[in-house]
Image 1 (cartoon, one colour):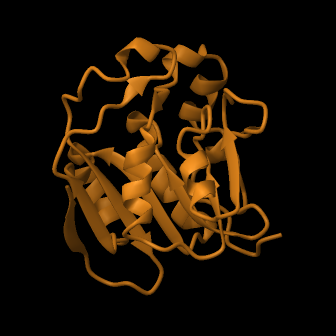
Image 2 (cartoon, one colour):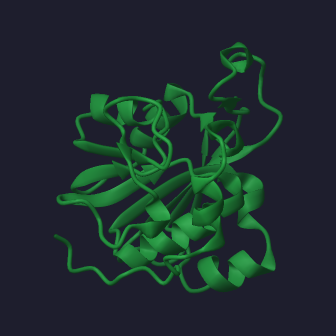
Length: 196
């Protein structure tokens, strides 16, 4: 059990209610290609076990495990038997042994995922998001001002994120720019780097 403080996200938040009554295809389930996760792991080391809290079908969990980490995989709508059915925004503590989170949260609630993870006392957090996540006055005030990321890794080439149910979109090419955004306890300021 973790003695980390409970999250500041209310247990009855509207996003959690929406997700419980929405079909899987409406949940922003986009698969992350293995090479994008491997690129992060080549640049960052993570303490303890890793929690992939929006795991879907394990597309990100598998390369994390292959890199030698113990992985706890969960999702509000798991797409594989070994992924736990858990609503991350309702969790009150980190899983036993987990000190890190690596995930691709749904874009529309990615800010809630970050605030919640930081409230749970995660030691290191990495999310892959559209670069547009870095802009916006609300996120500046509630996330980036009080909790600046340690590093931002910008992909020089586009990452194809395809809808989980639409395998034929896998190699269509990406239209949006993505980056890994990493928070780490004890790392002030933000460094910027690129992934070729």
